[in-house]
Amino acid sequence: MNIKIYTASADTKKNLKNKIKNKDFTNDSADTVRAALITDNDFTINDFIQNIETEFEKEEKFIKSENFYLYSGKKHEKACFLFPGQGSQYTNMGKDLKKIIKTDIYKKADEIFSNVSKKEKSLNELIFPGPDKDLKEAEEELKSTDNAQPAIGLTSALYTKALKDYGIYPSAAAGHSFGEISALYSAGSLDFENFIYTASVRGKLMSECSKDKDSGKMMAVLGSAEKIKEVIENENLNLIIANYNSPKQNVVSGESQEIDKAGKIFRKYKLKGISLPVSAAFHSPLVKDAADPFSKSLNEITLNSPEIPVTSNTAGDFHKKDTKNIKTLLSDQLISPVLFTQNLKTLFEEGFRVFIEAGPKKVLTDLGKQSDLSDENFFFASADESGGKKPLKDFASVLALLYVLGLNPDIDKWNKSE
Image (cartoon, rainbow, N blue to C red; front, side, top):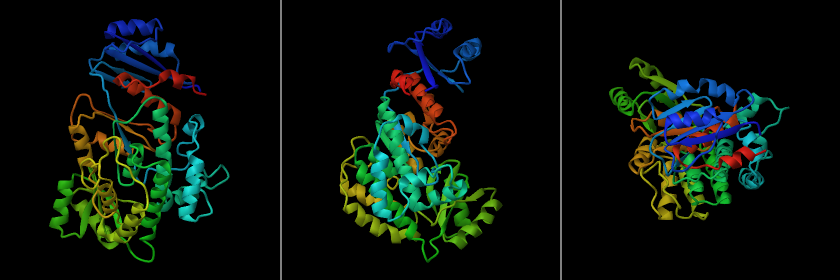
């Protein structure tokens, strides 16, 4: 593999600069200043060394450039994994990383998905349509709720395994909407078979609830929840805030006609509304037809108490150890608002400052960066920052970041990967 990570540490920036100039890439766990360099075909260490003085002159404790991380703050001992929901899927997600991670989860997932969906196409075929397929058509097919959710779950499982393979384990987990299922899987609450089964059933039921009737729409609104509530009340709109995402962006759900009307009204208040390509008004009572059968399906599976803290979108706090209560909250989540903003606050209050999005794209990373939490040691990063354009470099960047923050990923193992 052409992408390599070079690490070095020292007791001061001056000593670290001298070490890197001498190409001395050694480190000691006691050192307080840590740097990581990422190299690929377009970059050499010599090129970097010629320009490194500019970066070292900065006074910040944390410096990040395209191929370089430097950190001289307090070492971090734990990280929270974040898991995305529907909308983060894209064809060929995880393709390059899958080549270097030894796993049979894709074969297992195909069997489970096919048993639930009764479709001719396997989950693998939906995610990896092949070069002879029409890409636009394949993207549309993958976007369907019954395909997207298990596909995102499978890809999130790959990223979770990859992070663990290189020595990074979550100390807590959080997900957004469907991502909560992935979070419970990462926490050992669901084994892989029950995870993909639950993902497949959830996607199928949510897809079916919109057939033969109007089950509403969703709209992202660029504005605070308080401002959106004010507009809803002032204009007597029959809408609810379905996703509390960040201080700058939230999502409303409602009947299709009401959502269409709301777009113009939000503009009057200088708020931008963006219609979302979903099949129903999820996280509202309009999809209650999916909640009851999903609850029944959850009662048929084995769900264990999480081994690490996992946040509940519905409660806003951590799930309790009571598995019956977890199942209830998961089924209620389909018709209840997603309290993601509150989830981040809960994690922040528990001392979490490092958040790694272990799934396709970087939606939650961007939402996290919009949060109103403030701390000099506060980091969000995605293992798929470029949405599949530079997948291995994205993953190497996360390992580099985690190294400088003190979380000790297995860099040697990465550099030896083929």
